[in-house]
Amino acid sequence: MISIRQVSKSYGSFQVLSDCSTEIKKGEVIVVCGPSGSGKSTLIKCVNGLEPFQSGEIIVDGISVGDPRTKLSTLRARVGMVFQHFELFPHMTIVDNLTLAQVKVLGRSRDEAAEKGLKLLERVGLKAHANKHPGALSGGQQQRVAIARALSMDPIAMLFDEPTSALDPEMINEVLDVMVELANEGMTMMCVTHEMGFARKVAHRVIFMDQGRIVEDAPKDDFFGQPRSERAQQFLSKILHH
Amino acid sequence: MNDAYDGYGFDWSSIPGALPLLAKGLSITFEVTVTAIVVGIIWGTLLAVARLSKSKLLSTAAAGYVNLFRSVPLVMVILWFYLIVPQLLKSVFGEGIADIRLASALCAFALFEAAYYSEIIRAGIQSVSRGQASAALALGLTPGQTMRLVILPQAFRNMLPLLLTQAIILFQDTSLVYVIGLSDFFGTAYKVGDRDGRLVELLLFAGAVYFVFCFSASQIVRHLQRRFVK
Ligand SMILES: Nc1ncnc2c1ncn2[C@@H]1O[C@H](COP(=O)(O)OP(=O)(O)OP(=O)(O)O)[C@@H](O)[C@H]1O
Ligand SMILES: [Mg+2]
Image (cartoon, rainbow over all chains, first blue to last red):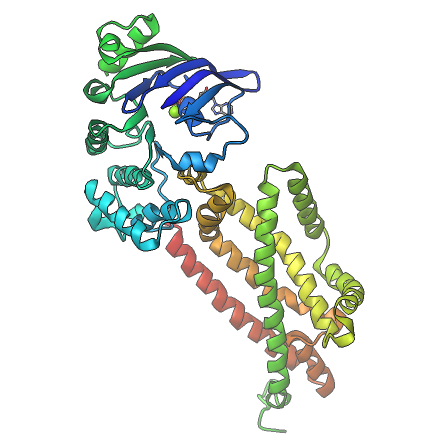
């Protein structure tokens, strides 16, 4: 469903991504981890064209992201994305956050969009907050709304960029629970996260990045059993004993 | 000595009779102010977006416009327009334009204020975090929709106190139209005072009226600031 082939990207002379390749099949859950600055966010943003890349190719559901003829907005509408800082629109109510793109991008009627939005809010346990503004919600609640907002577009895959790293510890699980449920339903997911508990529970594969390279791309059990690279071993031992 | 004599050597008696004239002047002041605010904000928004656009041509052109208008005195712009615009308007609309002075003042203020508004709005756009645009784009909104539906509403909200403060300055600056002989509130007060030999009284009265409007408006701004800056 998502294939990343020899993707490289640099800011001037600084190489952010070097020759990254991987393949994500339909229904697969991939966890991407690695030290800060290793290019995880950049890689995930390349998948829906939020970041351009200079060489290589990314194909999402048969469509080439880098091709100048590709209408990026259409592609992005089909790939959900969840950000570290939620990025709900603060000037709109929760339900308007969920309906905006459904109406403007998918051309759904307002009623249809609101109905869908409310159903998703119910699913993440926040229907009662539909008419509040994002500022009135806790971080964990905002992130669940952000996931519901992405789901309202009926995405074929979901991208997560450190969805729990800006949250207070007691709110992390409420967000992970939603993600686990999504994974169990067969959603194709690419998650940048350091929540190794989540990775153990639902990931099929773990990708480890360092200095813009995919250093390790292994089935979950192999990765946690015995990572091949020394960098990944160090990283794992640090993160698990934290 | 008449009834309006207040004991301080002022004679306010010419004001009541001049009220209809003064009201007409005030309506012109408001007409110029409101037009300049509305057109200035719309044109200023377009300039701000152009200035931040990736196109070198657009951003350079917008920057040139803004810097030009911000580098010349308003009074000069008003005069330029009075000398240029009448010809232009006549060639576009024929001779049927009712009030050339008003038309050229409206153009001058709208185009001049746009430069100032565009700077405020540009700062407003930059005050919205980049993540907001990413989130909107990630949902499939086009760059235009992202700007219109997500970025600009927040930019305006963040900049509301500054936009209103600019409107107050603008309201005061409209008095400069006296240089082209347009009878706005200030101009009318001056003419009446001059006519009746009561210039000091009329100008004090006009000052009081400006003060009441501007002070109330700035109180509203303070109130809004307290509400938004939490
Ligand atoms: N616009 C930019 N210009 C120059 N360098 C950038 C830019 N954006 C990111 N970088 C650099 O690219 C590198 C990779 O950034 P990226 O955000 O992808 O890392 P990350 O793995 O997501 O890190 P983190 O765990 O801190 O989120 C970093 O060293 C960063 O400083
Ligand atoms: Mg990151």
